[in-house]
Length: 301
Image 1 (cartoon, helix red, strand yellow):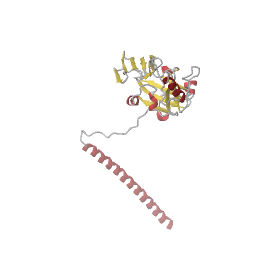
Image 2 (image 1 turned 120 degrees about the vertical axis):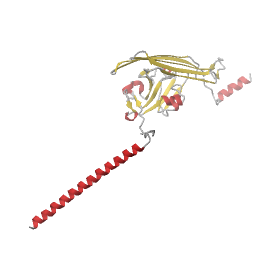
Image 3 (image 1 turned 60 degrees about the vertical axis):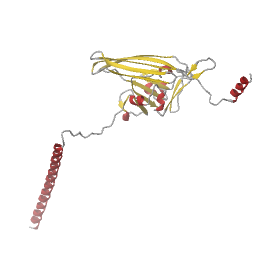
Image 4 (image 1 turned 45 degrees about the horizontal axis):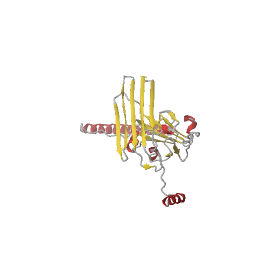
């Protein structure tokens, strides 16, 4: 008798707990439904011209540092990316000016434009000796530029510039033992567009460059870019009478993009540039004792 009574009590207690759980679930469901109805009513109460709430999204930077398109966060390489907007705002004319926005990069122009050293993290050589291969490779759209004079031209259609720090010989070859400067230009567009930039400064400095692009057919698009960079010299060579530290360079660049299908994309690029300038005159701010002695001898006749 005692066991039956205890079993009845336990059964009633279990049913009570089950009912309590069901009530709690019902209350939760009802509360959720009530909240949804309240939110719906609030949305219906908003005026029709109310602006939708802005959702913050992160900006993804696509790079090709590993020879394939990846986001900057996913690339296991120390790389600095300079976008076209930054190049425009900072007035980056060529790779020599790029050092102002990339802290680990230093560009040193020696006797002429053909003797330009690119140094990353304090290392770099090769420009001042034709028998030494450079340790910082410069690539334009994946094509290696072995000559310094072919590396410092202006590019009005640059999409981004990637500076890869550290040895990159596995993907880019033996000429990238210190790092890589990769210039990625903008591909032709299937709609007409373009831009022109011109500036004028002292010593008759004139810079004009621009690009125009557009479609030829539904599968073929072309673009043509060009520019001129001129400036008179501001240093006078008393020995020859010539003005040094001038600028005289121009370039032209053409591209063709053919997309016959979504799985096939062919891009043909050709460019030509010329540099003919008297560069890099050296001025001694503090003369040595030998120079002072020679000047004194000339002054005394």
